[in-house]
View 1: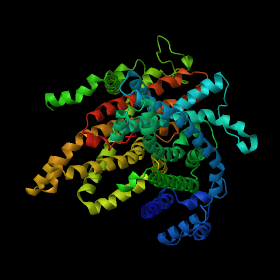
View 2: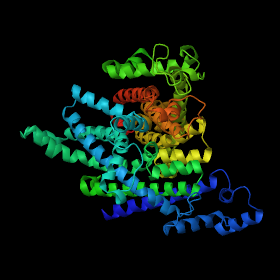
View 3: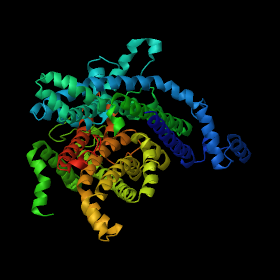
View 4: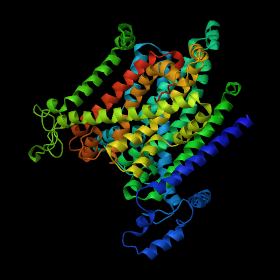
Length: 314
Length: 286
C-alpha cells in the first residue's frame, strides 16, 4: 500500500511539474508583450527596459521558470493587471462561491443520479430502465447554460421562487443566501447526474453478474437484501471514485454556468479575465484548478484502494 | 461493405426504434446543412425591424429575433456550422489520436514518453484547455475546432493505445509477425481495420460533445464570430430577451439537444455491437 501510495504521489508530482511548464509557457505564448499590456502603448523605451528588468523578463527562460515556480510554491502567483492585487487573493475571493456551487451540485448529483441509477439497474431491461437510461442520455445532451436560462425564466422571472443572478456571501447574509445557488447548481447538476446515473446502473449490472451474487441468490436471500448488501456496496465503489473526478471537473464546467447566473466565482473570473486580457489571473486560475484536479484524483485513487482491498492484488 | 456487414451495423438500429430516430434526426441535420439555401423560407441574414420579436406564427414558424430575422431560416443555416465544427473536431481528434496511439503501442519506448505527455494534457479539464488555447490563438471557427479537438485527442489516444496493445498480442498478429510481416504491413492489414468499429463509436460521442463544447464557446463569445449563424451564437445574441421572447432561445437550444442526443443514441447503439473486450475501454463520457 505504502509503496503504491508513494509511487502514485510521485507520478502526480511529475505530472504537476510538466503541467506547470505548460502553464508557465502560456504567459509567454499569448499574443502581445506582457510589458506593453502592463504599461500601455505610451511607454518610453527606458520605462520598458526598467520594467523588463524589474520583472526578470531579461533573464534566461529557464531561470525565469525557476523564479516563477519558486514564487508559486510560496503562494505568490503574480499580480492581476486589472485588479492591481495579488492573483491569489483575487482567486480566493471567488473560491467561496465556486466551492459552494460545486458542493451543492454534487448533492443534487448524488440525490438524483444514484437512486435513479439503482432503480434502472434493478429493473434492468424493462421499459422503466430504457426510459430512465434514455432520459439520462437526454440530460447529458443539454447545454447547461441553456437549462440555466430557462430555470431563470421559470423559477426566477415567472414564479419568483429564487433569485435570478448574483451571490452575496453566506458570511455576510447568512445561510439563506444559499438560495442564490439553487438554480445554478441544478443546471450544472443535470449532465453530471446523468453521468452518475449511467455509471451507477452499469456498475450495479457488472456486480450483479459476479459469482457471489449468484451464490447469495441461490442461498435464498431476499432479492432486496441481495441488492442492498451484496450488489450496492460493491457497485458504489466505482461511483465514489467518479465523484471525485466529477467534483474536480465541475470547477471548470462552472465557467459557463457562473457566467449565465452572474456568480462571483472562479469560473466567471476566467471568462472576464480572458476578455480583459488579464493574463496573470488566467494563468493563476488554470494552475489552481489543475492542482485541485490532480490532488482530488490522487486522493480518490488512494482511498479507492483502501475501500476495496481487491485492487491491491491486481 | 457487403450486405452482411451492412446488416451487422443496421441491426442495433432496427432493434431499437429510439436509435433509429436518432439516425433520422442526424440525417435531417445533414440534409438541412447541405440544402440550407433552398430549405430556408427566408434569407437568414435579412433584417426587418417592423417584425422584430414576433412569436411563432404561420409565416415565421420559429418566430423572429430582435432584428426581425427569421429564426427558422437561421436555425437551418446554423446546421452548417454544427456539421463543420463536429466533423472538424472528429477529424482533428482522430487524425492526431490514432497515429499517436498506434505508434505508442507498437514502440513502447516512444509510447512511454508520448503517453506521459497525454497524461499531462489530461490534467487540464477540457473546457479549461479549450479556453487557454483560445486565449493564445484568438477566437475563430478553426481555433474553436482545435481547442475543442485537443481535449478529445487525449481520450482518443488513450482508447487507440489500449486497443492496439490488445490487438498486438492477438494470435493472428503474432503469426503474421513471425512470418516476417513488417510493422507498416501489420498496421495496415491487422491493426487499423480492427480499429474502425471502435473509432466509429468514439467519433459519434466526440461529435456529440463537440456540439456542446462549441455552444459553450459561442455563448461566451469565444467561438465562431458573431456574424456567422450558429445555434450557440443565436443563444448568445438573444439570451437577454428571454423574458420578452422565451421562444427565441427554445428552438436553437432544441437543435443542439436534438443533434447531441441523436449522436449519443447512435454511439450507444454502435457500442453495443462492439467486441465486448473493446467495449470496456469506452468510459461513459466518450
